[in-house]
Length: 166
Image 1: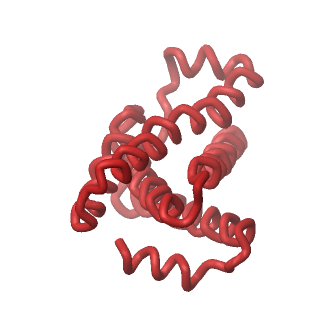
Image 2: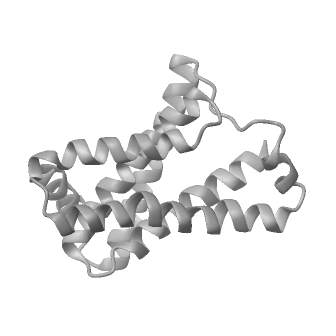
């Protein structure tokens, strides 16, 4: 992971906000690229179910936006990035286990998003990127929750607007 952190330091501006925007762009680019690969090359479906609770929430556009774009990232960032990183850093687990920790946490993040297998795989990789960035920020910043929440919020905002434009 130290090599990844070193790479992030090299490709990111030193200014906090420019770095955050740069890392947001990279995360979104990798996430959407993976979605295209899964969809177009492998043929896995990455879509939401057309019925059930989500359909009911979608009828109220403000509620759907609040849940999907704001509340979802807030809760998920807390449960799947901030708390695991807090526990990992508290117990000072071996650096060698950091990659395994990020993979397992990211996969659990993906499994919670149980729409389709393709969606779970795509979200697992996004979860791995988010927890890796959380680990990175936890070494650099006191408040490492906000940058990850911001990246998650921007990701869900783009998905929300792109999904509704189809």
